[in-house]
Image 1 (cartoon, rainbow, N blue to C red):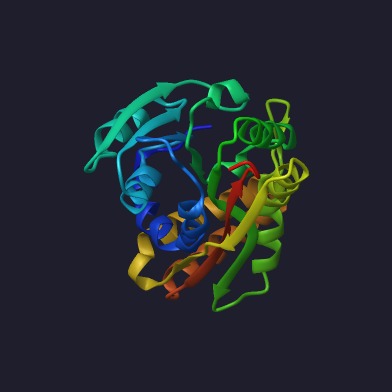
Image 2 (image 1 turned 60 degrees about the vertical axis):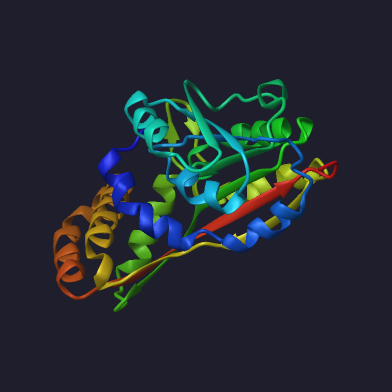
Length: 262
């Protein structure tokens, strides 16, 4: 699954504002004693995670940026920069990582990825990280909760339909959607890792009307795809929302997992 660079650019500030920076404290306290740090960003998109995190980690770092989309990799490879930061890009599938793929990795990170995986893929990712003694920082996974202001009766129905869409089957793969964080916590903890989770909500008001509008159209469109009966109400719902000074909180969750040996 790939995303348009325009959408990723539109959401970058909201992502940066939302990420749970407090999770970096236990990460910094762990003995990430490789110099330079080797950071793998899987599903890196245009590199927003690298631009946000590299300056917060400090020191010498080598980032390996993984994505299926060569267009996004080209942008990421050119823009994840900073003092002491070097970068390489790798194109290919990310759903079958093994411990040997993470050998020597100081940190595996991803943004808005967990909810696009299956239960088997999340479990495999946790196994690879723990077996390789590799910490994982996995941010901005959808939580399945949305708060719209002013509220409407249809909000709950669109939310339920969207969450069903997030859990849909794609090419024989049953996606976890808003169940992804709970599955990841279970997978890491069963293998003895220490796990922290923190909320990382988007809080969108009139100053981010472009992002809020694009998000709303996509959210309603996915809900209608899942429940076609909603399509009749969707145009009027969108008009009311887009012209009414809407505010929205889109809940996400960030997760940090540290293998016990780390």
